[in-house]
Image (tube, rainbow, N blue to C red; front, top):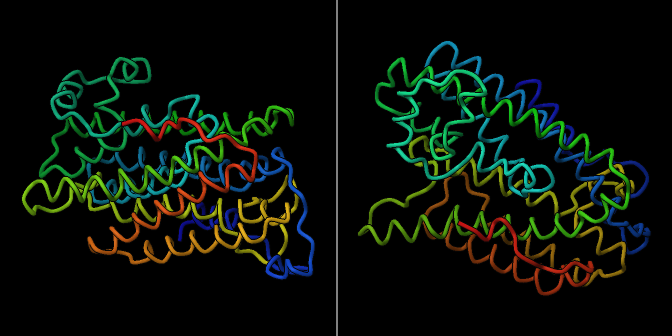
Length: 338
């Protein structure tokens, strides 16, 4: 495991056991967390660490591509994609305001536009600003790196794509740092966005990552499912990365009650702090059911369909009961679009 991946794992892991476990919540009081404390916790322990690791991973990708479209560049792409998926699974804060997904992960890539972009041979940030989203980002890089024989022009363009992703990643780090410094009333106002985007992330994983690819495969007379990362075979890895990020915002798995404003406080724990333990139990059970269905490294179509149903059940519970209990109005999410 690379050092930055180890640091990310440590930053995302629950605190080590100390006095009493939250699992003993029937006897140990769970604090009443404010919206500001909840948001500050996920900024400190989820978003900022993930953004920093993504920026480093994107820099590694650019360094690998500077040496050509090699097997090493493919592995660096996979690593950067995994970190991107974990960060963007719940598109919150600067990910939304900057429309980062459109900047660095527009899907699907448009082959004709990609070929034109390669012919233009852009160099540097100003030139890349003139290239359309449909010929940029992770999908465009995948299309180049998994070609049979990418030529020198395509590889030079791939390097510019990686540098573009690195620039956006570093801008996201700055955005999350600025958000951490915001006043409590500004941060508290974002709690509703966080929950709405979490619900949207569940739907995006279910629809774009499972349901639509399976349906398109059936419509093409039994051909393999049209998964978004089919060329590189990275669809299962991306689903796992996205689910892990969604999972950590709903399930508590540590040993100590989270410290208000410092630790990540999952929705389950917020409910327990409000004395809503029966709902917290149902939410936990629904999330664990989805977790079990998504656990296999390479699930077959039947398991994926089961996972989609369980994600749908979790989403329904979140909309019908979790959001009202947390005084959040469920509204339109960016994940609802195409």
